[in-house]
Amino acid sequence: MLTKFEMKIKSTNKKKNCPAEMAIKVIGGRWKLLILKELFDGVKRFNELHRSLQGVTHKMLTQQLREMEADGIVHRQVYLQVPPKVEYSLTPLGKSLKPMINEMHEWGIEHLNSHKENENIDE
Image 1: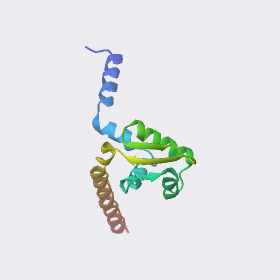
Image 2: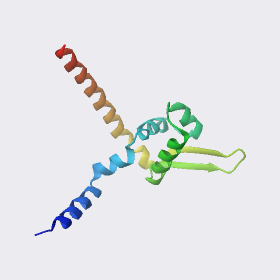
Image 3: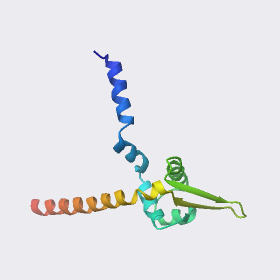
Image 4: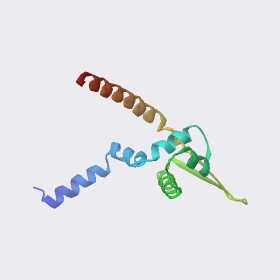
C-alpha cells in the first residue's frame, strides 16, 4: 500500500507526462495563440508582431517569444548588422500546431453559436 506522499508523487508524475497538459503549457497564455496566428502568415520582425498584437507590452511579448523558442516552436534569427535585426518564424514543430489551432477555432465558433442560441431561448 502506498503512503499519501507516494501517491501524491505518483499523481504529480502522471500530470507531467500528460500530452494534453504539455500542449496547453506550450500554447497556453494570453498571447501565444495570437503570436502563432501571426507567425502562421510568415516571418515577422519583433515590431511587426508588437504592432499586430494590440495591448501586449514589449516585456510580455519578449517573454512569450522566449518561452516559445525554448519550447521549440519559434525560431529566432538574429542578423548582425546596425541597426540590429531579429526575425521570428515557426519551426516545423510550430507549424505542426496549425491544424490543431484551426480545430480549436472551429470549436470556439460552434460553442459561441450554441451559447447565443441558448441565450435567445432564455429570453
